Length: 524
Image: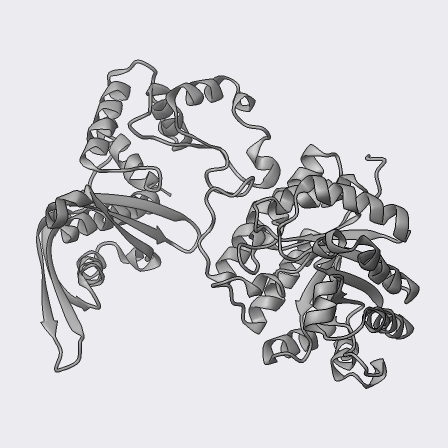
């Protein structure tokens, strides 16, 4: 065990995180995320501003009736208004009415804000901090004081900034949190200033950083090394502008690199990151440290060869430690090691130096030259391997397909119709379907044709569809690459198609998706 004081994790995804562009949670989403964070072992979960909007009102009402195993729910607000008795400030009353065991409120540390934003005196600003803290403590709450713009304020006037922290201490604050609100402070500055605060204040200190200069995580870790014992941040780094300190990066760095255990089971980290992304309806950051899908992905032939022999030669931790996995990518940079390891990962072992291995590698490079990419289309690559191993039998044969478009009335709306003719188990299936676009219509017609023989087709659905123009300098004569992501509710798989004809490229990716699904389903 570490000899250092325990570090507490404070999650503000539900408040600060929602200030990020494109991030939005419903009231139910917020409760589900809070429960997931609680199960994960988060120490504090900030729910939002009580009374500021119906969603936050609903969240605190529901949260008050739930049993929390690990986390303290915190309401967030500000100091009392200037020249107002704290007990008469309705915003402060709402903080108490949220019935949370912890309350976090912010105040001004920077003279610029005191003079130009609040338009008050430094003495009144300190009284606002002191009296708000005391009032909340008298009402039985754990009080966390967020010193907004602390580092900017300290660099402007260290005496004034420290005086605001002392005001919170005099009021009985349990914590003072140093906030790099503008995200412009460097790690060496954070460390030096945190050390000064630790000597001067004498109560627990925390850190709240933003990532405007790309060092939010580094700043948080620097502050911890200097004595801070609370880190505030968000899952996946969501937050205003470029985001907050990313807890999914700072947690494993603390626990696995610095010997500061904070979570009992860090193996749930990747699941947590993806869970929050899904509820936020945001794409996963594939390059995120620890939890991204490429965090332990290997592509270069020499790298893969080394990983095949000694995994940690190119992996700083075991992927499963954080709930992630090793991935071998295949591309024109691949050697036989990539193909062999990828085939083994797919349960299709191939002997090194075999004709099959050489043929697969040659086919792979030929297809990539044509514009194919398999990094996000592992299902198509698996089908390619199976074709070379003669372990794959097509579930249907395409005889013909075509699409038509019809404009409906004067509205700028088109209906697409698709016709497919397939050979299925020796019989011919001819079906027509309409859709919002050609791919949607083709998908509908294909399903109609396959459903009598393969009723399980209804279990799969297309989740994402991406189009990329290859060699765009060719203009309308350029090739098109289509990536389709499909799912059966439990597993996701990607397929790819390339053609000068966008509908043909889409059809190829669509057929691969269906064939992959049926092959998996029928082999179970």
